[in-house]
Image (cartoon, helix red, strand yellow):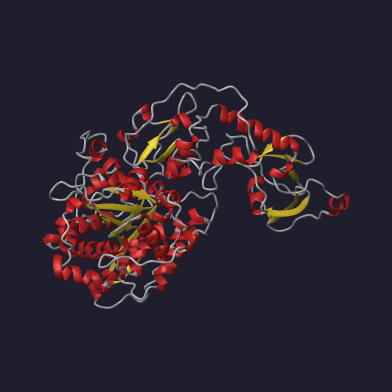
Length: 612
């Protein structure tokens, strides 16, 4: 029993007598009978993890405040059998902590059994099977389902959103979803209901609320109560029975530094070639790089910005790559719709090119092409069903969106040995890209890529440095001024919805003034997207960000306007940025979806649901 948690209970009297006091910023204590130290002010849980001692948790996540709900992080302190919650107890000098006593282990097992008594026995068909934190702990502790089933009132499943599914019958009342929605995103869509189960305002279906489908709730849910609206089965069946269809995949920048985590590698490990090889192994016919249309986005968006500055267009101009941000503008800030760039997201551009440009040149009917998009973002599923993103024949341009997690699941289901795959290249011409494109995955990346090109086009000389550090990093709101040949171009970069709300309020109050603003709804940008691999370490975003910048640094071409394939597509098809053709195929428009408007948007969930 005691082997479940590592460490040695015995403490020598000699060691206790010689325990010395701490100095500086550290405290010294004993942990399972061994000397340890940790930073002052940290919790027992953080101290244990720093010292590689496992303590079970369900309600805790390092990105969220502690809420003391699951009662699993129990430890004994100071040679008493009194149990303390490690997640909220601050480590003290000289403290004697035990994590693996019989008392601790039995208490944890009892509390797990209590949670299990209320939890549906649907593990084999649950979307979170094999990645469920409750399932892992039950196995680790050998918990027996010994308590009588506690029948909770059945809660109808919420399938209203094309991005997310809510099955609150599986809720374990950890409230990580509530905290993610409120603390991180400032949305407050989810609150704790009278029965202790998170609920939407007036118990509305999720898609009818102000939810922006960012997926933070699903990312932080430790079980299967909130998950992405998975299309793994549909894509799996499609790959086995193509029925004459050509299956074309596209992969987003952030996926290549995160999917490795699903196969035991480190966050930030660059797995581009292995990911492409895995998709081909699954049966994908063609694999294009969404980075290509990130470069195309810069050509269009940079030109749009310069045109607005020169000809008096609406400023500040807002980026339009992030679908969660677009949802937020349409639902909460519709008066700022004119500020949005009319450019589609890189996903939207790529799907349009595949159906309207590439298919014709390959002699394939658009209806015989199926586009599967691999994205770090749950909101991309919502974007894909927008009526504005259809072909002239009414075909949905992006047929399926799989998150990074879903692609990993598909790979695992097909027993593909990801780590040992030989790297493969993207197909051309829509597979060529630059370093500027890949940094779209990080907060500040769109801005930096745009500045590299807009500066050179406007001033006919390159920026003094390509690594524009003022827009890099994890500061919530970053501001910078760039000398554009006598014009002080004021720019801002904001990531994470709570910071966006703060900025928008300042903008409304006239407290800030910029020409160009990048918005990303998730912390860190796309690398922190709601569809990325789940992590409970504190540094996974930093590692993913470093991976993205490493790819950029190693690229021979690091400016979007120097992409030869982009130049070619303008010569052969679009003529020039902001041409009539580019507006038709690469740009879009937006709707006021605020509660005041109360005007339903055509398409959306209803188009998606009827397609099913």
